Amino acid sequence: MNQLVEHKLSCPYCGESILVLIDTSVERQEYVEDCQVCCRPIGFDVSIPADSLNGEIDVMVSHENE
Image (cartoon, rainbow, N blue to C red; front, side, top):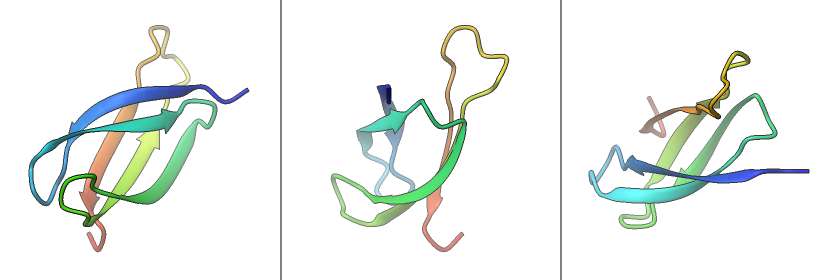
């Protein structure tokens, strides 16, 4: 079963705070999703540490071409 978790972050383009859904059933993932404010493509690098006991999620965002 997929577990989606809300995660708040800042867009690397416009700096606005946005809320995204992260699929925590996948340990490591990379994908592109448009900013909900400025519509520019954000590169996501998401990992869920194996030793995470409190559901910690590491989310790195960047400009699409970085």
